[in-house]
Figure 1 (spheres, rainbow, N blue to C red):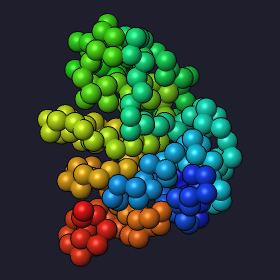
Figure 2 (figure 1 turned 45 degrees about the horizontal axis):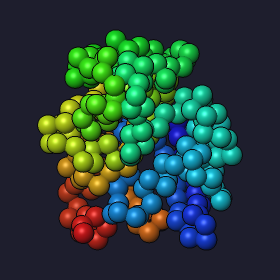
Figure 3 (figure 1 turned 135 degrees about the vertical axis):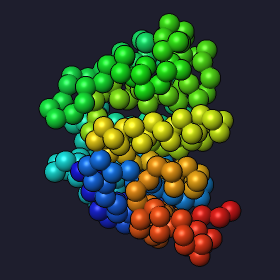
Figure 4 (figure 1 turned 90 degrees about the horizontal axis):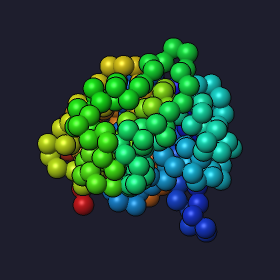
Amino acid sequence: MLSVRELEAYYGRAHILSGVGLEVARGEVVVLLGRNGAGKSTTLKAIMGLVRPAGGTVTFQGRRIERLAPHAIARLGLGYVPEDRRVFPSLSVAENLEVGRQPPRAGRPVWTPEAIFELFPNLAELRGRPAGRISGGEQQMLTIGRTLMGNPALLLLDEPSEGLAPVIVEQMAATIRALKAEGLAVLLSEQNLRFATEVADRATIIEKGRIRYRGAMADLAADEEVRRAYLTV
């Protein structure tokens, strides 16, 4: 579904991504792991067109997208949930969901506000409340829900567990598993290895903008040497 090859990206003169490559198949959850500043978020932003790649290719459902604008990529069915959530604080929960609505896509589940409220029962009780007056965990759920309203085929999640209470992290893990059961592909960046182990099929480790490891999540969880080399602080 998603294929990234030899991706290069810069911030000004700083070379951030060097030859990054990864793949995500339909109905698969892949986690991009790495320390702070490794290039995880930049990779997702480059895929989404928020950072213009300086080289390499990004192919989504058979179509090259690395030169498209972010809104054009979103219309093709690629959803992006940013690390900093970016809800519309003065709009209600229900209104935030409507902002993300896109037409149905052939062969994809159609997400409605009621379907989102079933996925996130916490939000159902808050549908009329301004999004700026709900908790950080609820805002994370809302941002995911708003993205799902675009009926994506693949979801990019940037640090979905960061800053959340443990009980909300468990809810987030359950949500990702539920989305996978719906046939949605997910690529997430993450530092929380325990969370990643609960949700991911495969893991890719990035360090200083280069891919250092690819493998099954279960194999990484059992490989203390690799974890110590690339993931411990």
